[in-house]
Image (cartoon, rainbow, N blue to C red; front, side):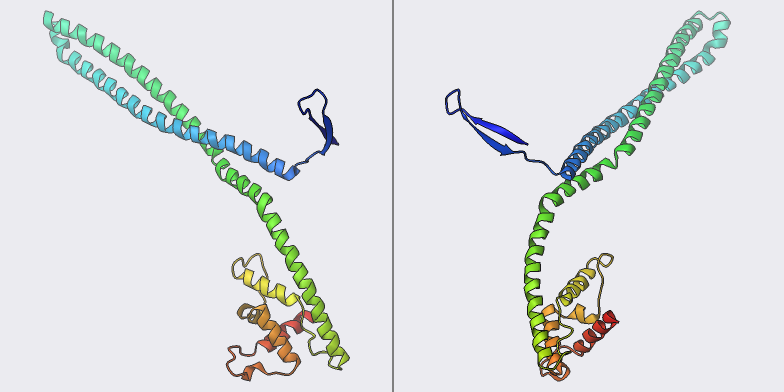
Length: 270
């Protein structure tokens, strides 16, 4: 399916150019959708955190107000107890104080009841926000995962494929040269001279080096692959093929690596 692009060039008639549809990778689309949904939740999470902070301060103020009404209520009760006897005995001043205390007590009681109801509702809302925050908590790391997943899709995969293609080309040519080396050895009557040479040694060095970083992802081979580069291993294998003993080589820092590699190869072939 194509789209038509019209260029007017200042006139009513223009040329039509067929352009191919650019189809987006469905995995990328899915990741972007997940990322967008997670971002909404992250934004809501931030809003909830802000609401919780504001409500927390409001509850402190409401509880302080409730305590004030509770104190006023208790004070009014004390006054009534103090003047109840004199008021009942006909003391006009005591009766007036008692009436005022009753009004104060009634108002304080209602205010305390209202304050308690407000505090209860505030706590209910606070608990609901906390529950929502707990439900949204996972959205933040998931959003981070989707951002990273998109970056991996757009950058890392293509970069690694590019390097793998180049490495395969190098290794393919190198393997061909090693096969020629073994063929020449066979033609000379030394069939086993370079029998263990092969690009699999490259992969063993690579796997062993990576195992030091990610031990659960990669296989670790013998210590020879841990201590030596592939170039050193190739040198040791060629030395072994032509009968050079590297153990007594002047200035050599390796001790018996050829034997270790040969033993590894024999175990692998068994």
